[in-house]
Image 1 (cartoon, rainbow, N blue to C red):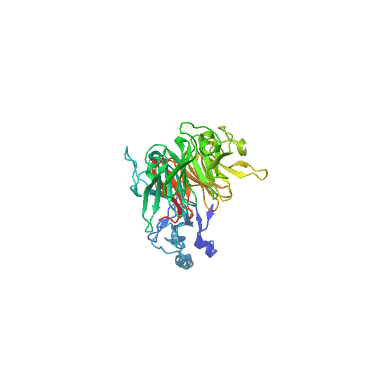
Image 2: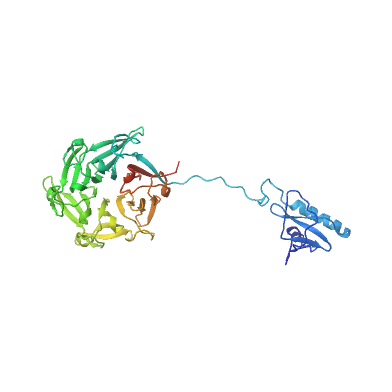
Length: 450
């Protein structure tokens, strides 16, 4: 097979052809610093030429040649050498005419995870108020954030509701809003008691609502720190019953949310129902009713009390009154919307397919749910330690968490959590996570990484 050298092709003359003939080596190679092309040898009559590769082209050198062609070939060689690219100091395989490399562009925004508050705990040393980096939590399970950016924490196994504030100078500190040890007492501040408070929510007036799981009650904390029981009966009588405030019954409720009208929604976990606590039409009491769920541990969409859940653990409510449910063991996010006619509600599935792992729309054990101002839904899943985002159009993506349990701050899916069950979003779109078994409160911001 014949191949033409580039310089000779340009000359459009057939004086010399380049052949594959590995049995014959050129007698001499001129041109220091160039590499011999080992795949092609030049032959013209009885004389050999060396085909020498340069940066981006070929130069042809002559050892000896018939004198009658000397003049013609000298002109050809000079023209070829002039046209050969000159070395630029790079490796021979780099092109001397390569375009310059553009400098790296500016970094783009992404999700960045940091630690807002909390540190390691050991033995009995598991509670401390003070500067964020010195504060101690024990298995925090839920977070809520008010319009001023204060973060409230259900510090489950310290039996307290904690408050995280940021000063004008940017100093973050942790204090105790209410609670001191295990119990069921109403009272003010540290005179009150909780028994594994699991869920927390805050209304526009600064009232905090608590799902006090192990005593099957819903509690309320005023901005002054006064704790009262608004719904749920005697601590030794869990069960299911609708009715006036403390006559109603719950069974280990774990999640609460509150709407702009003061209605409180409850994930009544072990009753497999979503309950609603509304202000009484007369007096100062409340009325408890069942919004959705028939009490059966199963999965079914449909009208209100014919729907079924598998241990719902958290709820969130949007400005239109739609309620979102973290259906923990159903591996789904459910949505409860007003029925188009006849009153009542309809339960549907927003995301998740009920399977563990695998398919793109799978969510493994969603435990916490929250909404931003644009209608995006955020999910904290304990199964793989991931934080998900569901857009208003239903697109599901992972925004943080590697899927491996651990403790690591960083960008998006490089970060690690350890069974995070709680999530909240502030008015600026910052996300707060109750990182349960890391005993910390984490923060996720959409920004340019440092």
